[in-house]
Length: 498
Image 1 (cartoon, one colour):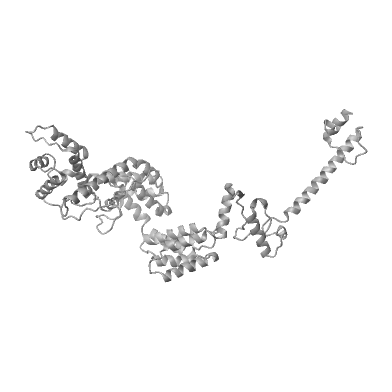
Image 2 (cartoon, rainbow, N blue to C red; image 1 turned 30 degrees about the vertical axis):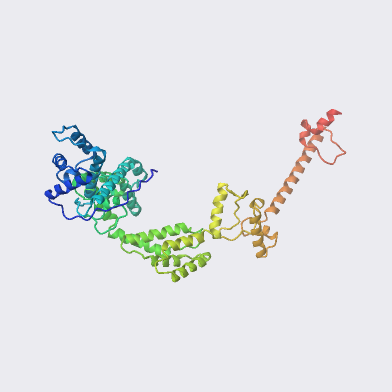
């Protein structure tokens, strides 16, 4: 998988007043050019006149335009207004246009109000770094999108898992304006001005304008993705009414209205309620603790999505109530005591879950399950076979062990100690019929005796046939020679020597 590229630390643009008048924009651009390094008033005037008089002019530019602007002024004569931009000032101009475009990506009107020269140049630098990140994300977009594909929306019961996967899929693709395509299907129509965002990319997703040529192109791209993932599925029927609009936002809204509508919400909450009533952790055999926690999280997510968020305290109480393994009583009590003695909010649900997970990893039934896996894979510990000395319920098997010598001294001692504790004695375990291996040694001896008797009978029959054919027998020996001796065996060789 392609390595994720961390976004630059977010330095939010200041909350700006309504768009400034054009005359004010010229003054701001003139001030900006001076701070960039164009100290000559006449030079600034020529640049503004030839290139941009408003922020909208700057927003419409790209880095190639800045390069052409610099080259154009450098080719002029002194009389015609020759200006050598130099590398530093050319780079700052490129950062200026990225800064203006970043403002548009978050639905702000660009303005230098509230900035000093140092803070503005720092903001320009960050905008340039963000542009570099977007460029790298675009280059890796196809690979990441392929890896993040949510697959087909095959049925209603897959919607809860499919929707977040689809949002993640869109977040790997960069749209026309340099914003992850997931902005097209966000819940809010207007920019979100109340939330705190982890990075600038998330701010763009929540605040980007849902208008303009760039949005229309992105909207169509998202629609095409939705069609690809619903064609041939029952979910296709729910976007049919808006299919002609070719709008990803409208198509997603149609899917959400159905799959997240009142009827489906009721069913999902009912599913969460069933989890709440029936979910228990008893042992690793009936339900592993990892799966138990996963189902718990699914329940919490359903409640949260539909406005019934469980608090941290409620989650912890639910966890304590649903753990019914006798081997975890001490771990649960320890966490209850910790919650009581430490300041409120210090012990989180995650803390409790991690503590109990550690205790689970030391349970006999957990060790038994993992020993079985180790035995199948052929792993060894301390040059000894990783033996399974436990029954399915976590107790030690005190019956017969086919791999007794390969178990190792420690495991043999555990079995013998358990036999002694149960009063089975040193050899009584062989007759224990509880583990499905009764009297194995006795059966083996009986089988050997039967085979030996059969072999002797065959030898006698062979000798009788040989006498009937006039073959000589050794009367001095009570043992009957093997049939193989008639065909050049040891006895025949001895006779040939004489």
